[in-house]
Image (cartoon, rainbow, N blue to C red; front, side, top):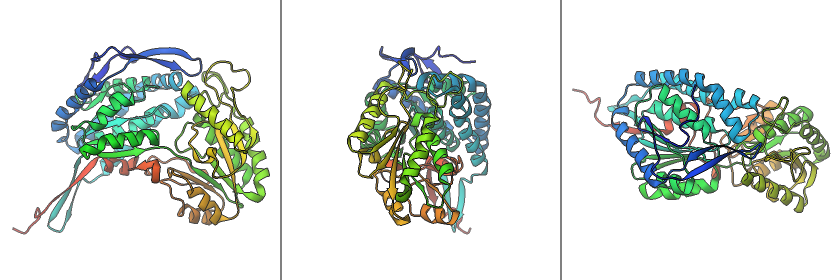
Length: 479
């Protein structure tokens, strides 16, 4: 089983190499505020070295057959399974996920994307005829990946798996806040026999390594998951080289509870869903829209549900949510909670400060605000913590208007009678809409409208993002 012995090295061209600089960064356990380990921090020269390795490997890897890439994904899946326990432990230690969540969702989520991509690849046709033309789909080239800390392996795998399936080579820069799972992921790739240079890993921050990757003339595509602010910087840096940019960015998803829904069931379920992963999900249902006439009833249900969410040590039994990932995130969330109070929302439960009995760690109280108006800061700004805003609406048309009145468009949620929910779903300007508690589906496309990004991940749609389309005219001309 792998350990983190290579934390101060980078995985480039099939081997662990020393960084070119001397910078180090402490990885902090957010539950204890103690140092877990140190990682090396790269610079533009390290990024260039990794890009060169990927560019050199592309020449041969892009020509591999579909069957060779199927075989490679199967080896990665087998290797990934061996590393699951270590990955779960690393994620819990570095970003605070409770062990049940780390074991059941965080670590296996990446495996799920590889398994889905494998099936997609087996069924995918890379060539088709249109009259006398042959249309072929080819790998886009060398890809740069910048991934976040909140669902780290999920976001790594939903980029790496389809890129490999397409025949691309790549450089990954994971979040420096939660990098240990990515180091173990590189061990998986090595153990599976991924050809040298096809997958490369460097650690570093956005202004140095991320910017160097985004602007690098030999990177053909950047795929970024993170904040809208950082996504804008990636796009700006990428623009002069006209490379493809795929972005999965922020969200402020509306959750419409229709007047014919079972309020107790829907609200209790969705308060827990919001709080899962300490509210650190870009598609979290953070704006709950309820009928104005039932606001007080909805607030009481949400308050009771939030009071049942146990916050504490991620390694302890019975804990539902752990800390948020860092001191920076903790302070941002605290400031936004205070903003909600100052702007006149009704605080039902939670509020500022740590939960009672927790004197260290970045723990946040599950917080519910009611009587929120959609122009309040807490209704418009992504909080990325276990904070719910209850917003009232008059009728279905008003609910749709409020839901769409945001810069974001990543996800949406609707609970109520099936026909009504389906009709409203078609009017919501988001990349995903969940009806009556439907979970994420790895085969369905994931991505956003508006400032939630562009491009799609997961399944067949994710594979297509990494392909160029070439038409060979006269290919089938009569002899």
